[in-house]
Length: 345
Ligand SMILES: NC(=O)C1=CN([C@@H]2O[C@H](COP(=O)(O)OP(=O)(O)OC[C@H]3O[C@@H](n4cnc5c(N)ncnc54)[C@H](OP(=O)(O)O)[C@@H]3O)[C@@H](O)[C@H]2O)C=CC1
Ligand SMILES: CC(C)CCC[C@@H](C)[C@H]1CC[C@H]2C3=C(CC[C@]12C)[C@@]1(C)CCC(=O)C[C@@H]1CC3
Image (cartoon, rainbow, N blue to C red):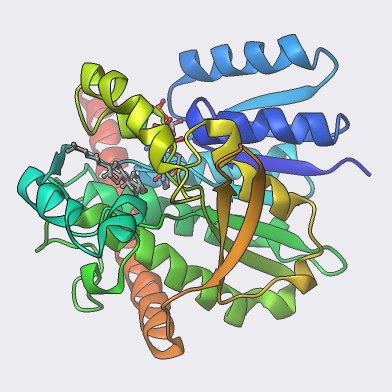
């Protein structure tokens, strides 16, 4: 039976590297690249087909930052496929990043230096904004859009006699202290990225608690520090070129500097090969690369508790109701307007 794999944010970076690795693993896959930019998606598909001419690679328009787009994409997936074996929730943004240079130099001469380089703790802030649905953009893209996608795909993901595996691309930057259950969208802080990634860790645990019995298994990975569009956006590109030799030097001390998208996709690829029942719901699976360039996956316990994960799950269900109601009100207004226009014509 051919397996169906859907990857969000598959047109570049870690998502695209994962697709390449999956096709090397299983040439019979039905691979669906779910992307918001169809031109880049086409380019990604052509690149994949160049190295795997017989592969079955489909494209799907999906902007995870727009609830309407998620609903339309989910409809399309349900129309196209009878099953989804793997759903990789990989699309993510870090808009308007700012590096605190003073904190960086302070951290450089502290005992915390390795942790600072692996997690960016205390170094990175972002400026977020509201999207067209009235949600904080980082929360909407990195978490909520993916949550709605899972909810819409439940008929495919929760089938008797078939285990479906949902995999979140989280981060070492996910931190409990950046997240507040009173402010799940992170309206009042300056670390929306860190907050959204911590929320994905919590949500994965909640999904396992609620959906394992229905055949849905959820896992979380961290790709390490990978040089992609997202990272290049943090500092000017000439700066990265300058510090690249230093980055390879740091790799000797921390295996979390995976650097290439291929290496960063290690844990995503590793999960594809595992039996879902052998996985730990409280573990985050880290892509690691040794100083000599050997890739491996290391599980580490996440800093999550059942109470907070249940509270987040219930808040997301409430927000889903609000957003769906608003969308149907907007739809009704549009329909009434169209009716009025056709009557006056
Ligand atoms: N690079 C790193 O060091 C780390 C990355 N990560 C995570 O890895 C994931 C992949 O990022 P990475 O490969 O690094 O960066 P890239 O910027 O290369 O990839 C991000 C992908 O997400 C897509 N995307 C962004 N917003 C949306 C949206 N609204 N709808 C659909 N697709 C969208 C992008 O598409 P488009 O081309 O249209 O922008 C792109 O394909 C992210 O979740 C990121 O947070 C985690 C830890 C470290
Ligand atoms: C100011 C300079 C001399 C050096 C700055 C280095 C930093 C830009 C990097 C140190 C740790 C890095 C890091 C990330 C981005 C770049 C650093 C802050 C990530 C936040 C990228 C996205 C993630 O999800 C996790 C990464 C952790 C480490």
